[in-house]
Image 1 (cartoon, one colour):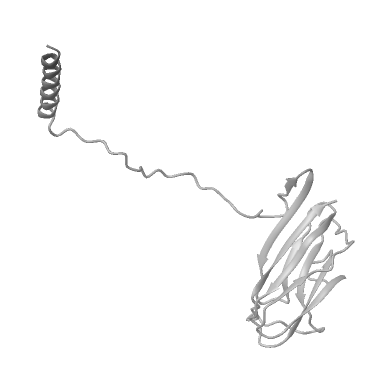
Image 2 (cartoon, one colour):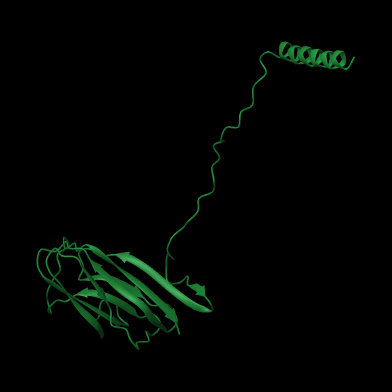
Length: 176
């Protein structure tokens, strides 16, 4: 009798599934497919300006990188924040783009483009790749000054608007 009960239950289940399929033959079948959902735009990467420092263990850290400017003897310039800072690192990377040997000078001043306080020089040979670190040991940068990397020129030398050195600068300052 147990076998007859099991056979009856199985037959009822098969008939029920068959009737369900016959009653709805065009029913959609659900498959787990990814849905195209737009997410809001986000901004990732470096701090966009020195007005937005990162707080790291209570110290305010300012970081900014930039590509060399073209058509100017001042290839990189950064205005220090509205606070006294020291440098963790100030580096320049020259990737060529000049046809002859060139000297660049790191400096800072209250005036953009001026080289009031020398922070070191780099001699870049034509079309070579060079890295330079500004000499900043013990230097405290006053608020709202300019740290620059400038092509060393003589008085009256004009830089062509087609002057296009390749490279960039990275500034890492910490508030004191």
